[in-house]
Length: 240
Ligand SMILES: C[S@@+](CC[C@H](N)C(=O)[O-])C[C@H]1O[C@@H](n2cnc3c(N)ncnc32)[C@H](O)[C@@H]1O
Image (cartoon, rainbow, N blue to C red; front, side, top):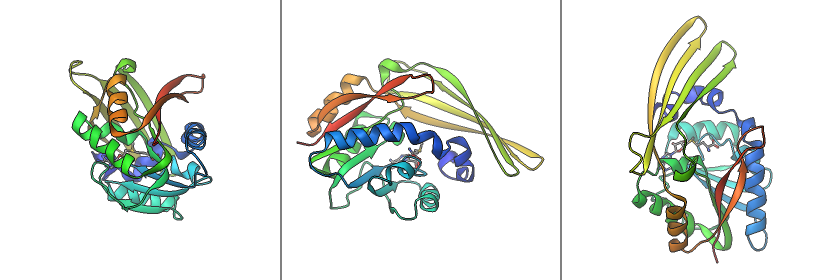
């Protein structure tokens, strides 16, 4: 996926850190409510450019992991005080536990139940007893709607326009496609790139079954998704 590789110099125009403030506040209050005792140490799996962490680090001591060295480098720039670790969320083992574990939109790259189970297991072994974890997929199967979004960003002599088109070639399987059509302008030069992402799409019941089978107690909480007061749902979990 070029967005997490050679396109990372454009990433902050695609997804500005300020846009994450409201949802990060939802995650923070969920963790504080769900974890028993004090919650200080937070691990994020698939933390990307650190655009949730930039808000969460005011409350938590954050350890940020990701598969992509380029995305980790972006996050280091924004969050130099946080610990950064390279790793795959299916296999990462740090040998320590945290009060809170966040798996945000990176969880969509788990495109089979086997991978999703492995990522949940990674979160579980890093959650202390009494701690909390939060899983925030872009969609559960029941909420998926095909659609397009226009993304626009400018900084200095760079400007970006992007159409994000989500569609589902086979509603019977557990994936959909997010197609990104980028127009990237530097000075007077414009180039185009098509970046295709295969993303996981699981029914709510599958999520709950996998989370409970791993050992979590699960609650669905609302998260804000737009400026008109719209919400969707994310999975707030407690490790007994
Ligand atoms: C949309 S970005 C995450 C952005 C992040 N939510 C933020 O706040 O900046 C998705 C991230 O998932 C990461 N990723 C994809 N597959 C992964 C895996 N198996 N393990 C860890 N990270 C993965 C990508 O490298 C990318 O940085």
